[in-house]
Every structure is written in structure tokens, then in C-alpha cells.
Length: 126
Image 1 (cartoon, rainbow, N blue to C red):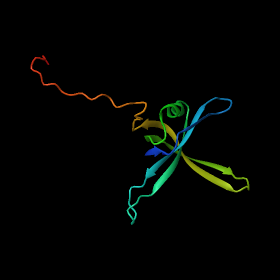
Image 2: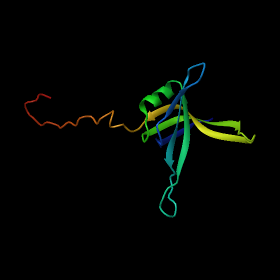
Image 3: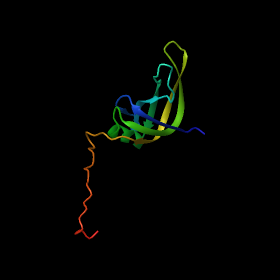
Image 4: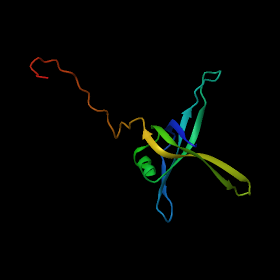
């Protein structure tokens, strides 16, 4: 079984491109995730995970997810193999996202909802 769930913040805005021929949307981005332990000096290490999404998920990400947003990613780990210019074999690990959820709002485009105050008035029937 190849399942992964991650929560982290985008390090930059997602990049949207389309596969030539099919026109399928592909979005790639990186999230930063702090490790769950402190080093001796009191700091935490951070991992930077490359994420790729395809299709409707990619279009959603490109439209609504921006740098700094906290997101939840569910998907699978993929390993791409290729040869560099010198002929050396290389491996590149990424997460193929199936479900992406924003866990924080962008206050510029989604302002806080108005606050409401309870009214204690005996004339109101409910």
C-alpha cells in the first residue's frame, strides 16, 4: 500500500502547466514540514517535500492555494528515474497528490466572517 498524508505550508506559489497533446493540467509545488523533535540548540529541522497534482486537483490548487498557505495533502509517493547529461542515473522522489485541502484562509480574498453578539432581550420570542 502506497499512501501518504502530509500537512505543511507552501514555500512558493504553485506552477500550473498543461501536458502537450492531452491538455491535462499539472501543478507542482513544494511544502515545508517541521520535524517533530528539537535539536540540542532548540531549533527544528524542516523537510521540503515536492508535490505534483494532475487534472481537477491541479486546477483547484492553481486557483485557490498560494504561498504560505497551510494545506493537507493525501496521495502516494512516486519515484522518477532519469539520466542526467553525463549519463549518470538519478532518482527523484515526489508525492502525487490526490486530495488537497486548504487548512488556512487567505484573508485578502476570504475575509473573516462578521462577528455576532448574543442579545438578551425578553421581548424576543425565541
